[in-house]
Amino acid sequence: MNDRIEKRIELKAPVSRVWRALTDYREFGQWFRVKLDGPFVPGQVSTGQITYPGYEHLKWEAVVQKMEPERLFSFTWHPYAVDPKVDYSTETPTLVEFRLEKIPSGTLLLLTESGFDKIPSDRRLEAFRRNDGGWTEQLKKIEAHVAQTS
Amino acid sequence: MSHKLRSRQARRQQAHAPVFACAFAALGDETRLALVAKLCGGEPRSISQLTQGSKLTRQAITKHLRVLERAGIVRCVHSGRESRFEFEQKSIEEMKDYLDFVSRQWDQALSRLKAFVED
Image 1 (tube, rainbow over the protein chains, first blue to last red):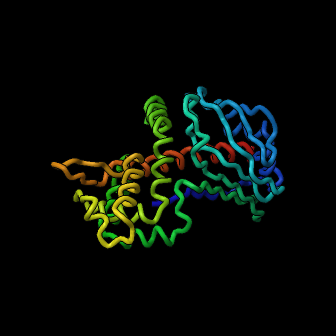
Image 2 (tube, rainbow over the protein chains, first blue to last red):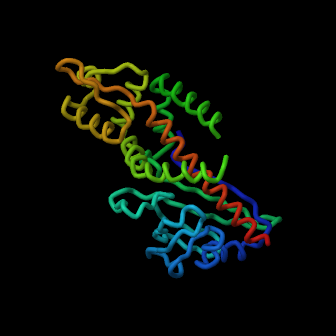
Image 3 (tube, rainbow over the protein chains, first blue to last red):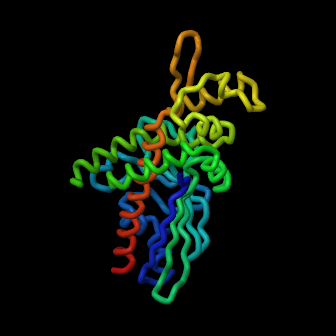
């Protein structure tokens, strides 16, 4: 099982435009659908209210990690799990990274969300897979199940 | 899928999210992964069986099993005076569903970003 989510998307816009859409809190809020209380500052907590229809009861809270202009924007958060009644402070958050690369057609955006488990390397998970055929069977069942329901 | 159904599923998955975080963390340990590997064949095993071949004491193995139990990955079944542990198959499926859910949210968010910057 993967412990991370990876996405790559090509955007027909200059890197500087994409950078602004990611890191200007008002612009971020427009496409992500969140009303943020203030600008993103590395090391500081970003708070706000989700505006996505059906999710308006959720709060946004993330800790901004890195802002390397036009290269890397990252934050930690608890993905889509912000129940006002739950205290998440004791749980390990996931890390979201947006990496930008200039390409002829515009910008290549690489998104990674990692930390869904604490397994430090894929190697260990591989070892685990090899360890027991039953686990491989489980994974196959899961894949079939997901293919059916998605 | 209708919007109503989708948001109902989303809410259900959000409600479960802390449990998943706990499950992912529980699996982030070599001993516990090995225990799950032994149990995911489907047959319930006793603590003695699970301690066999391990350098750890029975107490240590029991402690790891309790962590997995709290995370909903294994289940304790009592047969007579003996406790046996079995793999909770649903837990892994639910974790996979949760990752898929987060993944789909990103797909949607990124396509909104695309429309936003290319406009």
